[in-house]
Length: 164
Image (cartoon, rainbow, N blue to C red; front, side):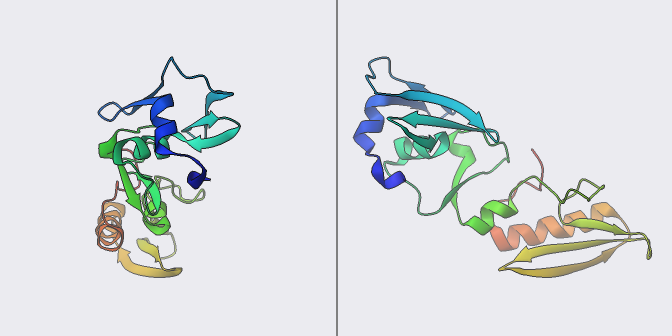
């Protein structure tokens, strides 16, 4: 869908403040249909019947082209569209950087679970569709530290599975 939109059209319709992440419509816009709304925490904008993710429009306005991959919100906050919070990331990097953990994980720590039978914490990570065990630990904090270290090694910048 991104290929159908031109940089000049976007420049004529929007103003982007890269320091605050705000995306504004130009008042002179005479579009057939311009709208915006939130879905899953992400701002979407409608332009002439098509819908675009606002962070992709912000990226286009700042860099003059769309990213090669997905756009990852580094701090895990999906409506924080400051340019310093956006990075071109593979799908796997983007998924690793999500703040969520498994719904059954009562520890609220991504990559860490408690094994009641052994009284230890297990740390594991997904990479290239394979689950990698990172070991068993006496504390949840130690297991989380190992998970975070491996996530940075495998995927680059990482927010620790929660908002900074």
